Figure: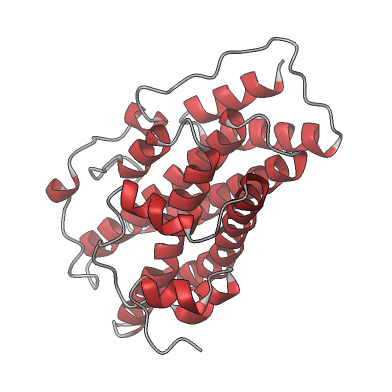
Amino acid sequence: MSFYKNLELAISTINIDTKKALTLSCLENCIQNEIDNSLNLDTEVFKVPSFAQICTIVEPRMLAARKNLDTQLGLGTLIHSIAHIEYSAIDLALDAVYRFRDMPIEYKIDWLVVALDEIRHFEMLIDLLNKVGYKYGDFSVHQGLFDVCMNTTTSVIERMAIVPRYFEASGLDVNPQIIMKLKNLKKEPTTKELISALETILHEEIDHVRKGDRWFKYLCDNDGLEYGVYFDILEKYELLNKQRPQLNNKDRKDAGFSCEEIIKLGGADCK
């Protein structure tokens, strides 16, 4: 079967084991440099996200508040919301390979590896969600990341700027705050496991943002663009002046952001 047909199936399925098997197969194709383009498949713009098969999709303002984290319901709501972000990130990484076919093989390998990381993160969180009595799909979700994905189908530089260098980078800011809040709660076993999972995710997401930074700058260099075009792209998508939590300067710098960029995004004391 075609490499790109396998990617299309991986993006479309809700079955996480099937997603993983197809992603591993595609990664092996890349490593062996065996990408079959013979079918010349058209690139599909997906009308609905794969998670629509089991999740109720609502507007973000309609989502349940994440509070009372010392209760099973509160913890379940939090875990589900994070698991949903990780699930969405799987399809985003796969779509980055599926859609932008002229990018180098190293790019394809990078994002297939990211997809496998996101699958592992999702599986960790779903295991914890099950421990508190819930499963994926028990809470409503939004499709914000899917919409971002579909709104950047024609420009790989915009995809790299918006997805890893904006939304995933924002996760570097939010994750430590969630960890700190959980550490202040009663140390139930599941809460401890969630803290450990979030610390793993934070460490690995730095590398994901770094990959986005690498390919964003690669594209800028290829097109003779200044890296400051990043802010033009954020402005185009009405993200430049969005309210943000306190920026995680250290991890953003590790991921490739300059102090100049961090300060322009609202960070302080960057050295």
